[in-house]
Length: 445
Image (cartoon, rainbow, N blue to C red; front, side, top):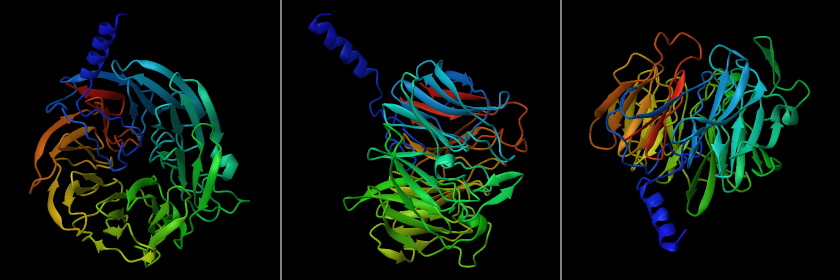
């Protein structure tokens, strides 16, 4: 090919990309806060409008897809075969590039399934993790690079409900969080925890290329029983030139040196009464010098300054009747926090440094919303249990619903166990990736 032809081909490829294209490499996106700089997304869409493709899924899962370039990585269950799947789809067509049956299993309880953790990718490998404690890495061609069973290596996970924390990538390390009870127990005829082990809660840092342990940081807690359990995911943020790892669960939030795992600070407990059933689901979110942790069961949101040392009091605390989240991880986008209350079906826009509520609005649905909100293109995207997608204007001085569309599977109800929509919307390549009960939709102009 002549030099001018090479230049023309390169220019054409460059011009075909969105002006602010970004990958969606893991659970909370490229910034660890649920946001992306993507623009140019379709203003109107439905199951028949602005659909690039709709890929059938073997079964339901609460995991968010990871997108890198022309690859979409998806964790899925296969109830018919009682298998857990790792899949790679072509981002342009939705066709399956490769898929693997990684491990046996489907459900440990009727609340969710074992494919709840979201996959992640570093641009070279894709990492899939399951509630069975199996962790596997594939290269982009679908070849297995390494595989481990962390339950066998470190002790069976001691969580009452299905383990669902997602793996996280940051600074050349792969992080796994295990916040669990401090003693073994039986639940629904399943052995939880290690009867012969220490049953410590810990954060694990692995080499993404080999899966080998780089360090393991024990994270103690004074919580009791189920309140020791955390289903959140590690979040990373830089403040004053220090990269911090934020961990929520066990009745507190902690900040760690991301490179070593060393604890830097710890918030005083949000559970002074030592209630024993306060498991924690939302991950932290950080911006503008503060990090947020959402206490469970309609309790308040707490903010901690990122330059804290030792055990500290919160910088501000919300009114739990106004701003709260039991399941959804808050979003930071364009200078504001957005807290989605799953039970009340409300979204609150909050000032980071003060906790002041700028506005609050209610989604027009009777269904719970447990999927975490996504920020992109000046908008906020949310999806309820039945696959109804809501688009809200970001910022401003009031709640403005711009669009809504139904992506739910006909005949499905919110009482049918895990056949509900819990996955947040991923955004990449100028497209929205919406996970309904039975398929993954790619929405784009």
